[in-house]
Image 1: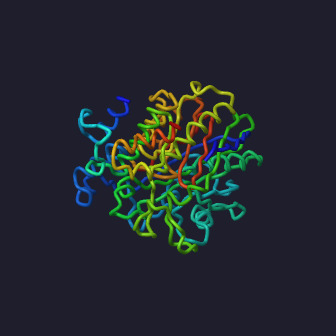
Image 2 (image 1 turned 135 degrees about the vertical axis):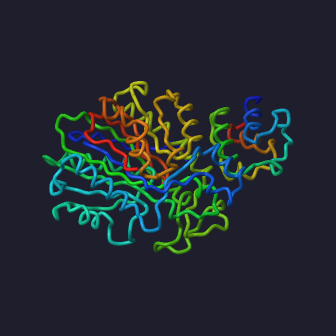
Image 3 (image 1 turned 90 degrees about the vertical axis):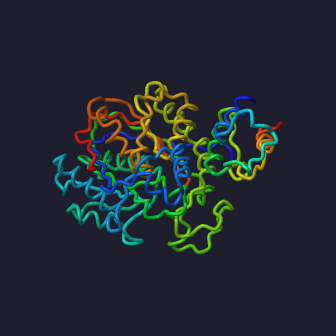
Length: 349
Length: 74
C-alpha cells in the first residue's frame, strides 16, 4: 500500500460543554486469567499490552446502559433541559439490538424531545473523534444547537475466553459528551481516513448477514462469532497511519507538534503507544495512559482518559489537545481541539 | 546490527550471546506478542515495517534478517 491520503475538515462555532464516562463496578484483575493461561502466560501479555485490571459488565448491563448513566449525569450537572437537545449520536459496535437503532431507544429513556434527531454509527477505535467531528459540525450549524454524543463499547461480551490476545486486553466503558454552539469557540481540526483492505484483520465475522466471509490465514480455526484481532497487522497499520495523521492535523491547524499540551491516543496497547510516542519524538509526559486500570475500552478510550488521567488539566486550563483514534475498519481520525474549561468532567465508577 | 540482535534477545528473554543467525526460533517463545515486539524493533532499527504473517513464519534469525533485507531492497 502506498501513502494513505488524509481527509481534512475544519469545524467552527461549537465547543465541548462537558464529558462524563461510566465504567462498570465489576473489577477484573489479571489473577482471573491465570487458570486459563498460566502465571507466565498472563505475565507475558501484561508486559507487552500493559493491562493490570479492567472493568467488565455483567450479562444484563449493556453499552447503552453505561452511556445512559453518563448522559443522565451530564445533562443534570450541566442543567440542560432535556428538550433542548437537537441531536443524539450513539457510536458503538456493541449496540442493544441489530435493529432498531439504540439511539432511538436512548432518546426515549433520556426523555429527550421527539424533535431530536437520533442515529447510530458503527465505529470502534476511531469512533470518538469521528463523533466529535459530526457533533461539532451539527451543533455549529444551528443557533443554540446542542448535541449529545454517546460513545462506548462492551467488547468483553464479544471475546473468546480462551483467546489470550483478546480476552485479557479489553474492558467496558460508556461515555457522554455535550457539544454546544458557541460562535466564539476556537476552530477544531480533523484529519481522517479509512482503509478497507484491513477490514478482516479486526472482525467478528458471523452474526450479521454476510455468510462465509473469507478470512486471513492468521484467523486459523477460531470461533467466527467471537472477536478476532490480528495484532501484528494492526500494529503495522498504526505505524503507517498514526504518525502521518498526527503530523497532518498539526500542519493543517498551523501548530507545531511541540505546541500541543496533551496527546490523547486510543488506549490500544501500552507497548504500541510508547513505541509510537518515541517514533514521533513526543514528550512522554504529554502522552497520558490509563490502559493499566481499564484495558482497551474501544471507542470510549479517549473520553475515559479525559475524565481520569487528565481531568484536572481539562477542567482548569484552556489548552490545545490532540486526540487520535485508530483501529477497526481500518479507520482513523485525529483531531486538535482547544478546550475551554468544560463545566462537567466526571467519572462514574 | 548489534542493536537489532540485542533487541531480539530482550524480546526472547535470552542472553544476547545466544542470538546468532542460526538461532532456531521454533524453539523460542516466538509467538504473536514476540512478533509485535519484533515489528517495533525492526521499525526502530531499520525504519521499515514488515509483514506480520511472514515474520511469524520465520524459523531462524537469518530468515528474519532476509525479510528485512528484502524490504530494504538489499
